[in-house]
Amino acid sequence: MSRIQRNSSTVVLHESNWMASTARHMMASLGLAILLMVGSAKAKGSGLATTPPMGWNTWYAFGCHVTEADVKVAVDAMASNGMKAAGYEYVNLDDCWQGKRDAKGYIHSNGRFPDMKGLGDYIHSHGFKFGIYSSPGPKTCGGYPGSYGYEERDAETYAQWGVDFLKYDWCSAREVYKPSQIEAAYEKMERAILRTGRPMIYSLCEYGMEAPWIWGPKIGANLWRTTGDVSNKIGFEEYERMMFVGFGQDGLQQYAGPSHWNDPDFLQIGNRGLNLNEARTQMTLWCLLAAPLFSSTDLAKLTPAQLAILTNPEVIEVDQDREGIQGHRVSQLGPVQVWVKPLSDGRMAVGLINSGESPLPASVNFSKIGFSHPVHVRDLWERKNLGLFENSFKAVVPRHGVVMIEIH
Ligand code: GLA
Image (tube, rainbow, N blue to C red; front, side):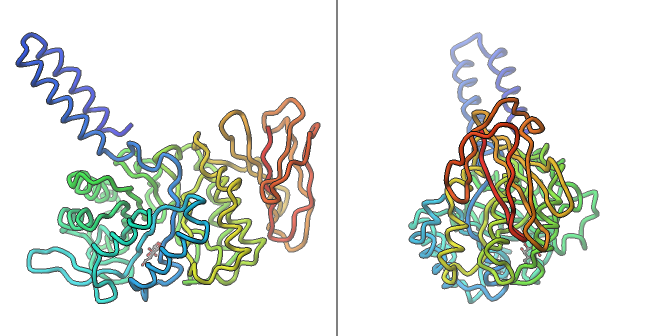
């Protein structure tokens, strides 16, 4: 529950005690309570992103050359390739859509996006939600106009376009704010969004600089990037960088939960540089981390094998588990790590991850992860039951690969 909600309910209590004496006052009290309830329903963290948000983002697919046509092609692909059915919901336009401001300071899109309201309608008409990007600074990372000084007008514009998700990226804000003002800078836009009355997921991107996991929930953020970019190149991923980012999430699990998630950046499956084992590794680790799942690749070029990795329902179910517990590392032996994620109904997801240069044996001891009895093991990538195991589970894990199981 956000700070705003907590304050609101306190006020409602006071008001109703004080006004209970006359019918007129009771009506006024009721009216106020309804007003405040409506206000708190709009508050961030309430009902939005109760499981990690899923979708697609333009950045690693098209960078700053992105066009309206690219987005529509992605929408069409997602609607028909199994991604929509698998839960991918948000279609998010990252940087480089912005044009100029008009005389009143309202932002317009650039020539590559001739009709933003129309694009929002297109996205919605296919059953998806519409995400957009800006910066608290005067310029975005791509050098386009940011929202600094125009927060309210921008939030209004987004609401008019039907936007459901805002990624707000620090970039040039470092030129106008001190590090100590970061929370206030992000809260300013949060308030502007609330004022529009349109629910929008609020996604912070300040690369983990000022520990957003500590203050993010307080200002109503639903997710925040915990690191720099997972890749330094558009359309290309380096396995080592990806593992550095993914493994670096250990310890942050205490800050994640329904409506407030740690975000280690986008899924790179489909981008060059990742083979299928490596792609499966990112999907496994990101799902164990209860990370937001945003594919960021040219969907028209996905191979059937890559698509199968992105849409494996049992693996996605781990990410989307209703308890919203972020997983953590339980052991490391050289390049072999074991990660667990507690799931609802006493189940547990386990990932055996080998970042070494050859196949290596890996094992998990059940008593070390809280099971004192023999457990049923299911292989989530192979989608088959492996039977009852007494004390431990052992497997040989391929180079740069994973074995992912669910036990109960
Ligand atoms: C930063 C962000 C990326 C992307 C680009 C856009 O690098 O971390 O995710 O949004 O800006 O310019």
